[in-house]
Length: 415
Image (cartoon, rainbow, N blue to C red; front, side):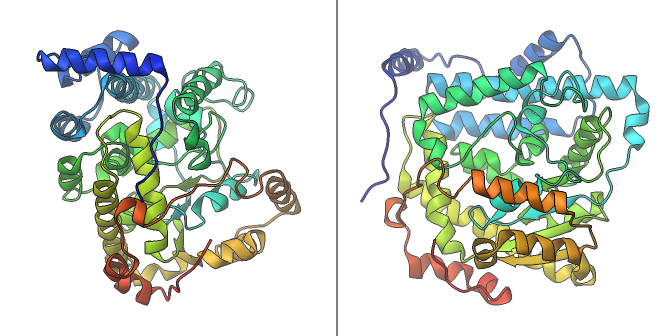
């Protein structure tokens, strides 16, 4: 069996054919040249100062890897230019705002609540449910994509950038309607922190969206502290006109940096979700496969499967080492088995709140119960995939995760 593909609209196929013709005569359009992207962002914003230069190496490594390995088509190049250009524009605007308001740099991000775990381990339902608690604030899609004008309590749900951001997400689903059953994106939906870290060009999302093993090999050797410092500055910016009681944050990318999180957020509280990784891998491979098909005509599902196993094996190994080195911070972790999320998510959240000595109000419970009723599992369709679609073997590939499963007492699960 081979992973399913989809047929692009005729107009997109025509544009990609033009791009292929241009590349045959040595023209890669549009330009993804580093200097061009930087200059375009400066022209678009009217600002020149990006602030810290720590993002430059990651940007160089990513663009080099994209040009050498990702095999983007014309649409993929346009999408990449827009995405990376957006990150650079945000950096310029945020840094300019911080220069105008230096008190932003001393604004505290107190005791953030962080959800870390492999994809498909219950992180999304916990994130969505806990974001229903008025005491928690999760960054929303528009706030990470186009956070200007700056979020304020009165305009957070009416900001003009909401419609702009939602149009971009809607376009994605028009191009690839199967994505709705795989992962939901929305301007007003809670958004993962990979999008914040991507502004520093240090994010696991890039090797999911693109075939960039060279970039990922570079990233595996880096300290994430600069990315986390930018992450904190981004949150300081978001809360500058909208004081926040408690940030609720989530991304599988936190798995590889559990130790470094405490270098930047020493009072963080981490919810660490667990599930048999081999049961996660085909779903994650399917996500990567479908995301890569958005911008490339040359995506090998077997290569995607192998890469995703390698990627998350490395991340879990780092998580193991971090948890062992952080044994003195045991009370700042709460471990969750996937079965617990399926069985009684709200009861589980109540235990999480008790562990971290947070008040679980009746209002929070009622909001979460309403969300569950209105958002049943598989509301947007069922995400279908198999190990065989991506050349994976339950026994052979499953052995790679034995240490992790033994340490956290993980049993094989279904669903």
